[in-house]
Image (cartoon, rainbow, N blue to C red; front, side, top):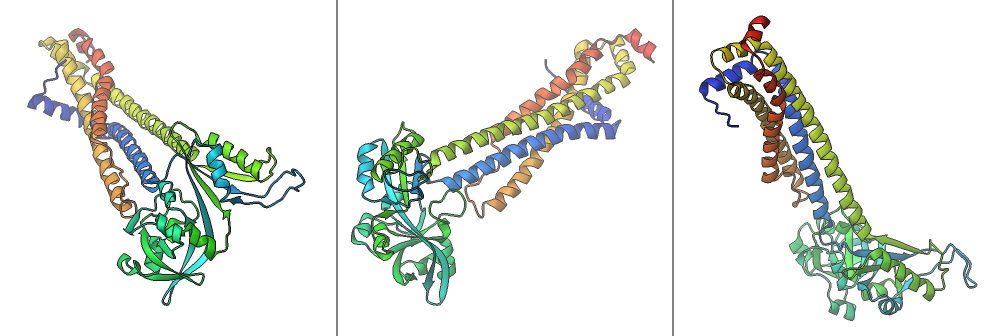
Amino acid sequence: MKLRIDRDQWEEIFDSLSRNKTRTFLTAFGIFWGVFMLVLLMGGGQGLQSMLATNFAGFANNSGFMMANVTSEAYKGFQKGRYWNIETTDLPLIRSCVPELDIISPSLSNWGSTATFEDKKSSVSVKGEYPNASLIEDPKIRAGRGLNDVDVQQGRKVCVIGKRIVEELFKSDEKALGNKIAIDGIYYQVVGISGKSEGGISIGGNATTTVHIPYTTMQSAYNRGNRVDILCLTAREGYKMSDLQQKVEAVLKRKHLIHPDDTQAVVKVNAEAIFSMIDNLFKGVSILVWMIGLGTLFAGAIGVSNIMVVTVKERTTEIGIRRAIGATPTDILSMIMSESIVLTLIAGMSGIVFAVLILQVVENSVQAETPGAVFQITFAIAIGAALMLATLGVLAGLAPTLRAMQIKPVDAMREE
């Protein structure tokens, strides 16, 4: 069906819609609000997802973490409530018993320390780690370098610091690099600055207030011996971290004489499960957004259909006269359907434009803190929304149009 709309027909459409301005406005507002909410919710959901993706960028989604805890079961002469520790000597045993693991990296942590430079102080947490820890949690080095194997082998007193420490002690990256800061009475040279922001997943403390030092340096500086605070793991492709953590747990329990059924002795954190849960959450949010938006749109379409029914009723005589002087059913179809489509498109496109403006304002305000956040909808979504509006306009005007096509001139005169 082709709808050819000339100038006179445009004037006729707008004259018909403007006869009852309040009714037309309220009906158009239903379509406007439906499209506005759909686009706004879609853009907001996409923005939140991109913010999380930015915060989680560089964090291995196939990783897991394990820590020692007090036992809850007596076993082989040991009473429950026993304290034990994961040790560096456990790592070769874990590697041989669980070859499906890719990275095995121990980590040490010390919270509540104070870093000083000249007369300035900053509250920090200290983290001892190997260079391969960056493959699990990328520090996003923005200046200088990260820790390397030589730092660990020689036990160098070097460090990588978070951006808040830079702000509180040095004010600039250039001044921080190469200088030394004192932490718990020991001086460390700043060789790198982490650009990681707050939020997302961070192991061992807030990334912006964390000082990263070589694992061997922390062993000797804090007299940790062979103790491991956090055992960081990643799975090889094709293996689930939850399954591998159970195997590692069994190895640790055998080595340290812990009851096999003790559910408290080993604390496990599965980042793989966390990422999967987040993905499922956003899928659910996306479905909810479409349900709300489409429901509101269909409610608006019903309103358009209702106003078209009233319009046909009010114009019964006019339609009858048109039929009497030679108007074909196709002409009547074009007249009513055009009004429905025009009302729907004007209201819907206004909703899209208004939602895009709001999303742009939100995106501009958020990008100062999270540069990767994108709240705008794609061009494909905008085109899809426009096509959906046109379809709704056709469907909304369909029933009134069929009624108008059935009006006969004689019936119209009797109606008068």
